[in-house]
Amino acid sequence: MLSSFTREWLQADVAICDGAIAGVGSYEGVAVLDADGRFVVPGFIDAHMHLESTLLLPDEFARLVVPLGTTTVVADPHEVANVLGTDGVHWLVDCAEGLPLDIYFRAPSCVPASRFESPRRPLGTGDLEGLLRRRRMLGLAEIMNFPGVIGGDPAELAKLEVAGGGRVDGHAPAVRGAALQAYASAGIGSDHEATTLDEGLERLRVGMVLFVREASGARNLEALIPLAERFGPHRIALCTDDRDPDHIASDGHVNALVRDAVRTGLDPLDALVMASLTAATWHGLDDRGAIAAGRRADLLLLPDLERFVPDEVLVAGRRPDWPERPPVPAWTLNTVRIDGLEVDALAVPAPEGDARVIELIPGQILTREVHERLAVAGRHAVADPTRDLAKLAVVERHLGTRRVGLGFVRGFGLLRGAIASSVAHDAHNLIVAGVDDADMLAAVRRLAELGGGMVAVAGSQVLAELPLPVAGLLSEAPVADVVGQTGALTEAARSLGCEFEGGPFHSLSFLALSVIPALKLTDQGLVDVDRFQIVPLGVKAGR
Image 1 (cartoon, rainbow, N blue to C red):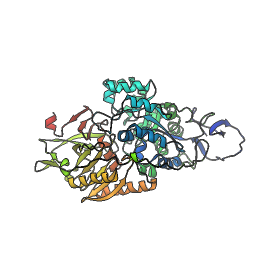
Image 2 (image 1 turned 30 degrees about the vertical axis):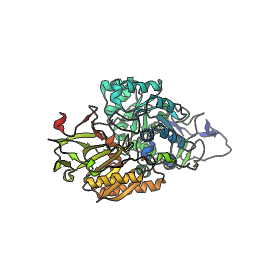
Image 3 (image 1 turned 180 degrees about the vertical axis):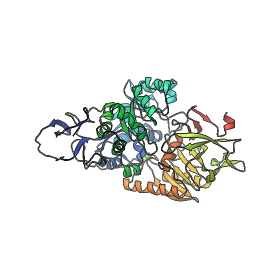
Image 4 (image 1 turned 180 degrees about the horizontal axis):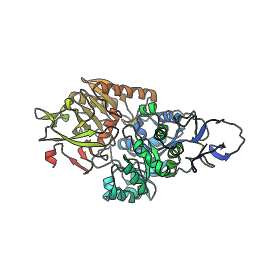
């Protein structure tokens, strides 16, 4: 068995009573589970993730990840909060009760993520105070408006006051030097946005806990794991952040991060500590994360230290069982409101000179700003598939304003048709990329008919779709159905020419996130994240 505190393997019995570890040593038991020849380790803990990114209701997510060894996750429910407000967060917390997966939450601190996004309604400090009274709330979730914190925005500082000196998770992409010092000094103690070795090292040096992220779109583990080899695992945890269900089904969950860390050369002892004790310690979950007297008996029996797939999982000392799911309330449905939207709303007046274009970066949710002369038809700028330039639109869907932000994107490789989604971080308005306006409108209208989801369209015909009727974010279907539908969507996108690494719909969903550099699009327009302001499409007009 693993001794997490000393990072060594021990030959010992583990005594369990009433769901807790009674002791480690030599014991006689009423019932015995023979673990001879296997490695007994603590259950895996995901230090930071978004349940909604799995597209699954909590019980179905648990069915997917518990057999892979994940026994605890710490979730930031800001996706559902953008769509359904605090009622949605309370509902999601209620859904997590009684599952064999222990789901803890942090109160969503940034709804909206910035002033450039349009959720159903903003959450204020009063909303946060109410959420923090919930039993499973561990503190404030990632503070995404890092320019506001660094610049001393009173609204952002007021949220930190609500935390009352408790642990606060961070979100500081590409923040370095004095800016990072200011961000950390505000009381923010962790970050999962480091993408390079130097960024990760700087976070450790300022005293932050580094969450190494390996998501579906942002894959940072290989770059950051050398820090654990050099400094040890006790200030470095593992997180999945946003991992698609098909990615989990095919590759794994936290166990996959452990596996890949070991493949890079990290000692399995260190990787296992990062996947359990470090996360538990940061989040104040001192009843788990290690095999020791008094701790919760979340245990995995591993047949090897290569695949890290358990052949036995014990949750509070028992094999998992699954409660019946309560009905999904009607008020969580029918959240897409775009009545009256017509194709002319997608027309883009041709700018003079070059235009700002969002360029995708493979393996990252960061983007680049590049400048291109757009193709023109009449007085309007249009997509140009010969140069991999697709039109991009974000349609406000919460209040039915028919407000549309328009831009262009390079990197999807679309040759025809359109792809669209109601999963568009973080305000989750509708986002659509395409080379034909009629197909883009058809995709958006189909999302409205579904109550949310993902679609691929060509010739105004739906090629594949995934309904996400719960807040436009979650499916009520079993995981196998969701995985099958996401696979069909990926194949449909490929038939349209899209071969982008990391999954086209996952990458599409982050093009509206206005707190990830460098250039993004919301319903309010193009956002220069570095300058933290709305900018025009035409470069000449803005500089």
